[in-house]
Length: 229
Image 1 (cartoon, rainbow, N blue to C red):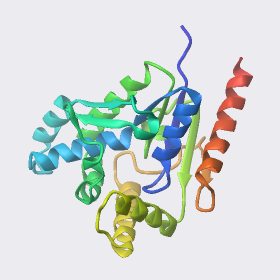
Image 2 (cartoon, one colour; image 1 turned 180 degrees about the vertical axis):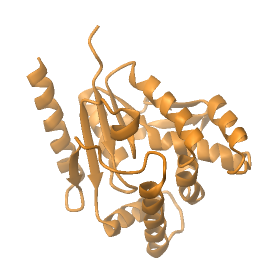
Image 3 (cartoon, rainbow, N blue to C red; image 1 turned 180 degrees about the horizontal axis):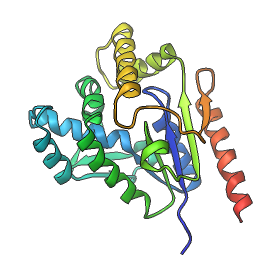
Image 4 (tube, rainbow, N blue to C red; image 1 turned 45 degrees about the horizontal axis):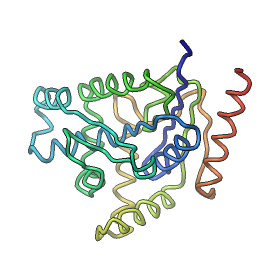
């Protein structure tokens, strides 16, 4: 049985990880697993059920029983996210979820459960998985690892555009502050902090188009796979 190929794409908020990963999955014929969406879906569920973030036992119980699935029927660019059967694709991108998701993701007991779910998903086919600790924790043996980054200002502009297109009334200063705070939380948390894997290819996307980023990663993967034949 041929071993599956795993591609890990990490990076901070607004670096373009998910968009790049979806396009690559489409072009390479891989399965795309959005780990950020998994944490967002769980955060949405926590908000919906009004759970206290200090009640770890209840949070663990919720994480274990919550079903998070993806539907690529409309193409990877329009991937749908379901939480216990409910389409939460748009709901998990709300400012409320944005503010809380890093806190939820920093809870060790939650991460342990979610990492296990993510690893299990990666064993079934060639996958592209993006997040903040894929190359360092979730898939440390991934064949290809990339770390996308960009300036704080550029990432804030991207996120502002994304939120406004979704109809949210947000301002640049607020989005900039939210991303700066999330960077701090993600990079300083005790469990699986945001950082490049030692063997990751680091790509600064600040002055790169989406197509340029996709082409660079795709070239590296295809050259690697051709050598393996």
